[in-house]
Length: 487
Image (tube, rainbow, N blue to C red; front, side, top):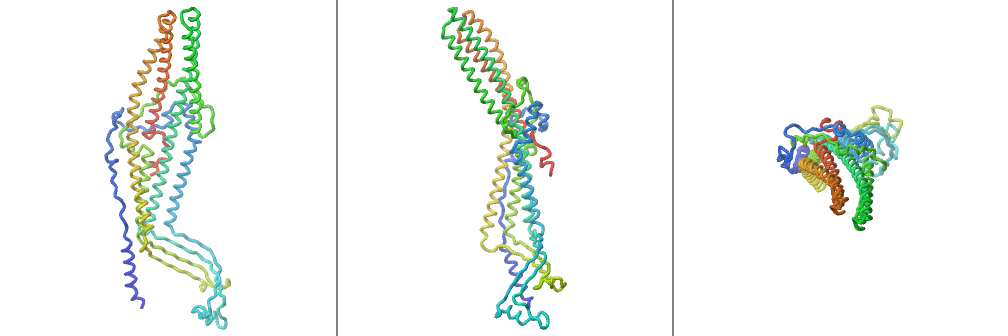
C-alpha cells in the first residue's frame, strides 16, 4: 500500500525543486582597474619599486617619534578599530558555528489528560500497564535526553556566508591599517605646523624689536627736524600691527597643540619639540614605483577590495536562499510517566530521527528583496573600490607635482628673503641720511617679514607633502596586521 505513494512524493519533490529557481546576480566588469595607467603622470623616480619605509626610519626626529609612539598607544580611533576587528572575528566564529550541528540536553516534566470520548482517551481507558493496573489519569510525562539539529550545507549557502564574514574581517584589519597610516601622517603634519608657528613667532619677536628701534629713530629724526610726527605714528602703527600678529600666532599654536594632544589621546599639555632645525629638516625621498603597486601597498584599496569580495559572497548566499534547505533533527533520551521507570532500560529509551527538505513556493518577496539588496550592495562596493583606486592614483600624481613645484618655489623664496634682508640695511642708511622716506623703510621691512613667513610656510608645505606622499604610497602601516601576511 505504501509503495503507491512513492510516485506522488517524488512528483511533489520535483515540483518543489523546479519552483526554487535562483535569480542571477549582476555581472560586473571592473573597467577602472583594467584601464589603470602603467605610469604616474608626475613621477619623479624612473623605474624601481615603491618603497614602504617603516615610520621609525622615515621620521628621524626623536621628539616626533615619541609623539607618534604615544598616539599609537592612546589614540581612541585606533582603539575603536581594534574592537571592530574583534567584532568581525566573532562574526566569523558565529558563521562557522552555523555550519555545525547544535546539540542541547535537558529534562522536562509534563501532564496531560485526554477526554474520555476521544480516541486517545478511549484507548487509555481500555489499556492496562500490566495485568490489573490501568493507565494513570491524568498521565504524567517525565523526559531526560539530548536533541540535535543540523542544517546540511547542501548548496554551500552557509559556506558563502562564512566567506563573506572572513572577507569583512580582513577588511576591518585593513581599515585599522588605513587609520594607523592616517594617524601617523596627522601627527607629523601637526608637529611640523607647530614648528613652523614657533619659527614665525620668533620672526615676529625680531620684527617687534626692529620696529621698537625704528620708533626711537623716528622720534630722534623728528626732534632733529629731519622728519615729521607722521613718520613716528606710522612706525608706531606698524609696531602695534606686529604685536597683534603675535597673539594671532599664539592662538593658532594653542589650537594646533590641542589638536595634536587629541590625536595623542590625552588632555591639552605642552608639546616637547626642537624648533631650531626646522628649516634644515629634510625627509628622505620616496619612490612612487608603478600604479599597480598601489593595489598591494595601500590599506584603503585592500580594504575596499575585501569589502567587494564580501559583497559578492553575500549575493551568492542570498541567491541560494531560493533553494530548498535540508534539515536533520534527532533526539535520544529516557521517557516515562513515572520517574521510577526512567531507569528501566531499554523500555524507557526513546529516540527519533527526522530529515526534511523544504523550499519556498509562494510569497518569495522577502527573499527576493534580500537578494536585490545584496546585489545592489555588490554594485555599490564595486563603485567604492573604483572610487578608491581613482582617488589613490590622482592623489599620488597631485602630490608628486606639488613636491616638484614646491622645491622650485622654496628656492626662489629663499633667494627673495636674502635679497630683502640686504635691502633693509641699505634702506635704513638712506633714511638716516634723508635719502629715502620712512615709507621705503617700512615697505622693505614688511616685505622682508612676509618673505620669511612665506619661506617658513613653503618649508612646512614641503614636509607636509612628503608626509602625504609617504602615506599615499602605503607608508605607516603595521605589517603584523596586514592581510597580505595573514593570507
